[in-house]
Length: 305
Image 1 (cartoon, rainbow, N blue to C red):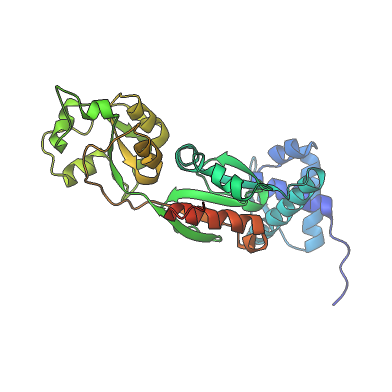
Image 2: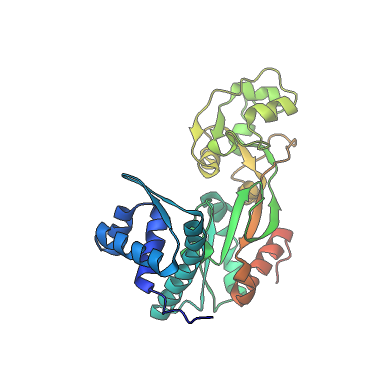
C-alpha cells in the first residue's frame, strides 16, 4: 500500500467541530477562527481523503454518509485527547466523576456517600447532576446512574434499583384530625402534588393511574400544583403542602427519618428503574469498579461495620 501523507490534524479538528455543530459559523466561533478558515480546512480534508464530507446548502450543511461515519470516530478520538490533556494539567487519578439526577443525588446518594469515603479515603467523588444521555469520553464521566426504561445502547448497563410508586406525605397530614388518611378516597380532602417525571411516559404511574388501581372513585386526580422534578414534589410533601407520589428509593431516607410517612400500603410497579451505566472502557478503571460494588452493597443493605 502506498504510504499516506501525515493526517492533517487542523483539518480534522475543523471538520469535527463543523460536523458536531452542523454549522461552519458556529464551529468557527468555537475554534476562534473564521468560517472561511473552517471551509478551507474541510475542503483540504475532502481533497486528502478523496471523498465528499458535506452537502453544502445556501445557509446550511449536511453530512454525507462518509462524513457522518468519520464524525462519529473523530468525536470519540478528540474526546479522548481532550480528556488526556485535562488529566495532564490536573491529574484526576483520585477523582471519580459520577453523573445522576438531582433527586437521586440528594435523596439516595448523598446520605450514604460517607460510607464510601470511609472505605475509600483515597478517592474523591465528584457528583454531577443530569438525566440526559452521557458522552462518557467527552464529558469525562466514570459512572452514570439513570432513571429510565433501560434500553441504553453502546454502553454497559446494569439494573440497579426498582422504583415502586406510592403516596407519601408529612406525618401531621396523615394524622389530620378532621381529614385523616385511612382509605384512598380520603385523598379528596387533600392537595395532590404532581411532578413532570410521569407525564407522557408509558408505564410510569401518575395520580390517575394510582387512584384507579387503588379503587378510588371519589378523588379528582387533576387538581394540584405540578413540579418540574420528583425532588421538588417530595420536598413540598415534607413541608406538609400535600400528598405526593413517592418513588421508592427517593423517599426511603425521608421515611426512615420520619419526615414522610406512607398513608397507604398499596404501591404500583414502575416501568422505569435506576440503572448503572458505564462506558465499555470502564473495566480498566479500578475506582469505577469499587464505586459500583459499593452501590450494589448499599442497594442490598450490605453495609460493612
